[in-house]
Length: 396
Ligand code: NAD
Ligand code: MG
Image 1 (cartoon, helix red, strand yellow):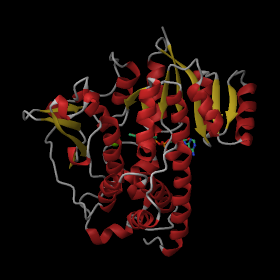
Image 2 (tube, rainbow, N blue to C red; image 1 turned 90 degrees about the vertical axis):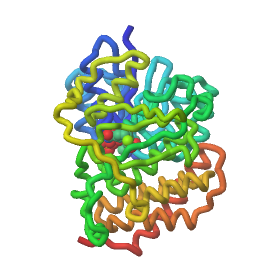
Image 3 (cartoon, helix red, strand yellow; image 1 turned 90 degrees about the horizontal axis):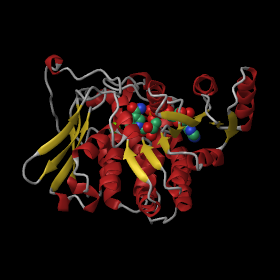
């Protein structure tokens, strides 16, 4: 029987890869809703091809324009707009699974709506767990929602852990989980040149094709920091049970270290269609059409310890996890503002870490205890970080 899927953020990198798999298995998956924020042309093409019941845009004006364009080609998709519509298409009773692939804390509310309805959630939007991991995992358990990690590292760990890992890592004989990191495009760049990095250089990731925000996060290694926090919530791992190792080839997607000395890893060609296919078909497997890993062509697999002074954002993320309470929410919000400002050439690459650090210094960590209060803290942090921008400038 075919399954109904809502793809939040269908016009992005993860969204498009998900649709490629839907296209490959039309008998297995049916698109219920697609969402594209402001990307009207891409969403138009996707609606014509996949004929979803609903499409969601950011504003009424965009929705009206898209609705008219779709009508003129006899496409019956209903176009909605705004955050409530995102929540509605994520939680509708007809939906079997939700791909959460909106970027940033903007993905939190719609993913939360899916959790409240006990959906099966394919979680790419790591920021949701960074901002609200504790509430999110608790509610998923209460409502019987299944959370399947799409992020390649967490997907690798999920595949390498015993099935009953939720009883506790220690009880399962797990010593630690090992997140691999590519190190991004500036792994070997001399420190004194880091100031002059341009957005164009930062988004050119050596191994993965991704959206702009996560590409910058990979270059600063904030992405790995967010993933440390994500791993903490997904697998119940304490900070001292999470290792990070740079592995520039991105062939080993992550590993689990057991107390008997065994290390289990998941390997593959770096292509997000593999973890996406894993989550879509779970607990079965489908062909993801990803190029097979050819061991004869692999010249070497290398490993480097990350330098936390060089990658200050990774250090700040470990610090935020240590502080607990709302510190990860503050870290994430400040980072989103700083990355956007860097992409607009308003601040330098190295200023991203400074803005995150000063936000962590200034904003109160005290635990919010509800999604609404966390989103307020997110807004408060954004306002503070925005106000900081004037003290920095882009250099090239
Ligand atoms: P992207 O920038 O390519 O796409 C983002 C999607 O979110 C688009 O559909 C966009 O229209 C939508 N969007 C943006 N702002 C929005 C807003 N305010 N409200 C509603 N929708 C909005 O990003 P991506 O690379 O596909 O990443 C998506 C998520 O998946 C991120 O959280 C990222 O960290 C995570 N992820 C991505 C990859 C990857 O390889 N791309 C790997 C692991 C995890
Ligand atoms: Mg990842």
